[in-house]
Image (cartoon, rainbow, N blue to C red; front, side, top):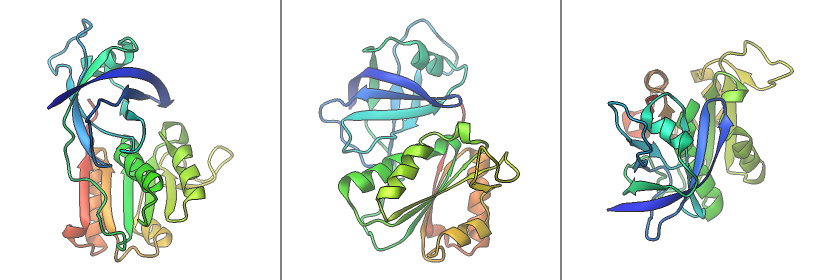
Length: 239
């Protein structure tokens, strides 16, 4: 089943990251962390890839509007997103995917996010707060520089008010803490995970980000003897 949704607003929320809000269609229901295919209107911008893409839903099911965010490129789909008119219609297909929170709230969770891979985690963390669940989550969020870290301030604010959420950001292009960044630096590593997630041995792991980052994190977790059944993966290509 397809749904028609009006474009409400859009804004640049980080370097080369565009967020856009859609009016939630009547009857559109989803689980936090799911994705769906979007079909943008034909406003005269074309390429061989077409005007249909799948994007993770970045909003919580309990939020009024649907939020998506994507890293911009020169593709016809993303140029259309940038240039289409407010109140134009985007056709949304049914939500898909199993990259979602477990019903069990006793198992600790570790989210490993790279770049725009933060979108399904924003959905899940927002839902934990909105629905006041008992999930205990540590978010590890890797970016090259703070200016590229979409939703970081919002998620840190959530962690400040919700005791079960911990946010651990790290920047890979900053060699040491500076006036612009006082947090962790370097790529996500076994020691970083162990030092910041006390329940790392028992956690359920979710990985989302660029393919190279996802592959690297998967290998790191295998090296930490995390069994495959406790690793969930979502890979984000840039197109």
